[in-house]
Length: 173
Image (cartoon, rainbow, N blue to C red; front, side, top):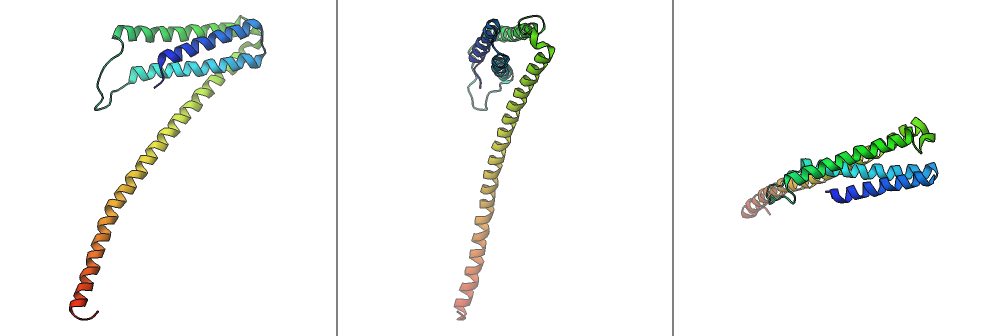
């Protein structure tokens, strides 16, 4: 699980880095690099919020809460509001501010980069989930085939032994 405090700190630090890079007038590549890092941090923060909101304890896990419901709700609210504020400020930078020279195409490119990062991460997560399921199913199939194969071999052994013993007592072997 992603630590929400760490994700929030990284998102804020990266956002402040974007503002500095823009203020100093760095190259477009530097700005996009910072924006890409920020988008990744925001995705982590949103996933952290989602994990907190959707967390279900395990069957034998002791249920306990580190924060009061009021504090957790407030922290989540603040994080969501901060994301909205940062996104508005970035949009403003592209529309009216220091990144205006990149225009709406620059903003669209940034949004597309963000979508690509999100899609890439989701793909990785789903591929890992599928690999885990495949691994578990393979182990289960091996165990099941072992449970079927061992008794089957034992039955064949008993039949062969009975035939052999019958032949040995009849004096045929």
